[in-house]
Image (cartoon, rainbow, N blue to C red; front, side):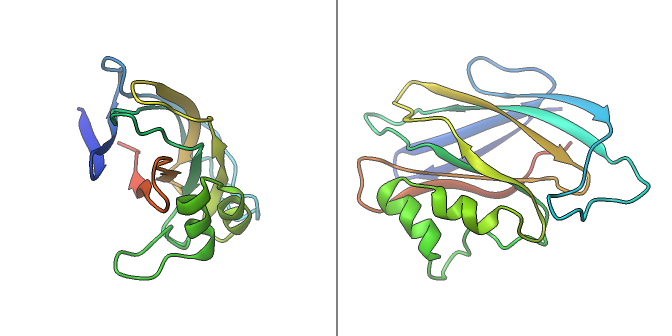
Length: 168
């Protein structure tokens, strides 16, 4: 079964196809294996081997003349503080990403936080028509993925997927 997730801001489109195979240039390839680990705080399941899924995320920049900055990537569960809440003021760390394209403060804020399995930065400048590919590992306990990037030709715009479940 395939499902498509997309997030549109103005003329920007981030699209992921979740399924067993990659479709064209946009997609997620999924493989499941036993084993795994807890988060960096050692809060994973004890005496249990959760299902672990390695995902290859392919982000195709379909925006016209709108590059994206390197992407902030986080794998987490619902215990993690969300990247943003619609209608509420953005954190200083998210504002730094939106204004400067720098995810360092976001990584520092989330790395090792409750409910976070991984927080980091992937890729470099992704121009229109280019695809950024990277691997993430999700588990039954940490099934959510958040990504965010600055729309570079703006002074404070970001694109994001906020806590999207990618396990089938």
